[in-house]
Image (cartoon, rainbow over all chains, first blue to last red):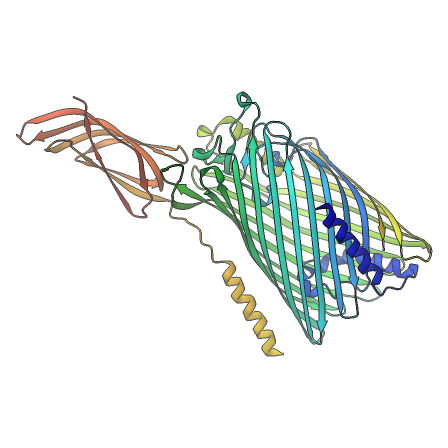
Amino acid sequence: MRNRILLLLLLAWHLSATAQVTDSTSTKHEALVEHLSLFNELSVISRTNPAMMETAYQYSLTNFHLTADWQKMSEPFVLQKGTGHFTAAMKADSYVRLSENTAVWGKASYTTGKKYDIKWNSVADYDLLEPDVLGDTVGGSTRMECYAFEGGYGTHINSWHVGGEMLFRAEQEYRKVDPRTRSIVSDLTLRAGVGYDISHYTLDFGMQGNIYRQTNSVDFYKPLGSVPEYQLMGLGEVYTRFSGDINDLIFKGGGIKLQLGLAPHYGNGVIANAWASQHSWQRVARLLNSLPLTTLYNKEVGLRLGWERKGDIDYAMWGDYQFNRRSSDQHIAGTSSSQIYPVIAHLTMYKNYIINTSVTAMVGNQGTTSWVVKVRGGYSGNRQHFVHPRRTMKYGHAFGEVMGQLMLHPSKSWTLTTQVDGSYHGCTNNYLLLPLATMEPHFTRMLEHNFNVLKSNFTHAGARLRADYHIGNTRYSIFGEVQYGITISSTHEHQNNLLFSLGVNI
Amino acid sequence: MRTTLLYMIMCALLSLSVTSCHKDYNDYTTTAHIALTLPIDGKIETIQYSVKMVDLNSRNTVTQAGETRGTIDIENLFRGAYSIHVEGVVRYVDSDSIAHTSQFRALSDYVSLVGLDDNVVSLEMILMD
């Protein structure tokens, strides 16, 4: 796997070396401004369609960097995610314009590190698979390794834009003490898209397919010290019949996403994106002759509608709406014959509705000295139900966010980027209903802990400083970056993030 | 140009309809009819019973007590796999028209109660005296 990473890094190096790029330092500065500007956020959805990547940037930029990322919480915000992490990564990121009409891009990374004090979760990719996970009351810190690759090609011929892209991630997460969880993930995504020029707009349509697989097992080397592994199904409910020692699982799934977009050619006009996706992941018990236990579905629809204008001063304003409906079907097992269980019925026991809506305004200027100010306000809500015994959790936050970015070119050799941001999430509603009389106390404590943090108010502040040094008249520059962020909840818990990067641009 | 535009929008709409093909399984409950039968020739006059049903997958328990002439109806039962344990007192007349009163038990380790409407389960009583 490491050889493949080296091969990709060499390929990226070769492509960037053969790219038609002017080597003046002002061009390097302009390339950095183009690639790092906050204004890119407006087009981030369009650029998930590979047909639109060919027009994403005017300048090629390739970088290789080493990153150290540290996160620490005073108490876990969500018990299943732990109290933080420390990861070190080696990354390459490249966008290369091969000709006026064609571009290729790619990413490769190797990440290794540790996640701290996870409880009630023995699988990788919790955000993707929750609540259908395996978990126990002991937990602990886990080690992880991740290899990720991404590559794409986009071109345009007359009025047509076409593009394709592939993303692959292989990850393992494991623990060297009881409970010895081991999760191995492979995650492949393929994207294809087309676009067509109409007047001074491009109308684009993209498709994305995903295949996901995770094998997961939990072992105990001290038999007397083992604890039950619960097949969790949402809001503290478990699949009791197969909890305990059914610790060998497969999560297999995937899905498709479709998107439609409209983007102006020269950054002046209306921008619109609509997308819909459906993904599912089935939890299968390998020890029971591949008995499916649950299937989790995630349906998502989203809409972005906005307007942008480029001139001496750039303006953009847009609204976002995103709705996720997650649901989990429990597969009801009949009586076994030689450890083969028939599935006799399916019941949709867990339902989760997530809404995110916001309005964003941005103003700025891109030049020798570039600056951007972004203001965003909106609402996010989360509502979960378990049908029987009835359980409900819901919370919603109104939020406001301000972000500023300044990019300076103080001399021929330097580009300095500073960024600050602040946000406040205020809880507007919250509700928790549990069948307390029939619940075991440790399940109640777990849910109440998560609920108390999730329904609290959050204040966040962050800063980022990056310095790029352009080496003489060569095509190279080196950079160093530091980011810090702190989030404080109204329950007096806090989270600190610190990130260092050191790398080279080509 | 207009044809191309319409074609792309139609493809998008068709694809969107495909993505929303999964439907929830929201038929949660059913009705169980537990028909109790005598192990001998005779006619049941009345049964006073208590029944305990355990969902084998969730371990949730349903109990009910009452009087019947032979069939116990349990409504709003979550569809699933159950074990059933019935006990009580039955009064019946045998083939010689002699009346008896006897304690009984009837049980099953596994019954499938997943039908959307009615589920009929027949259990033979074990007379205790």
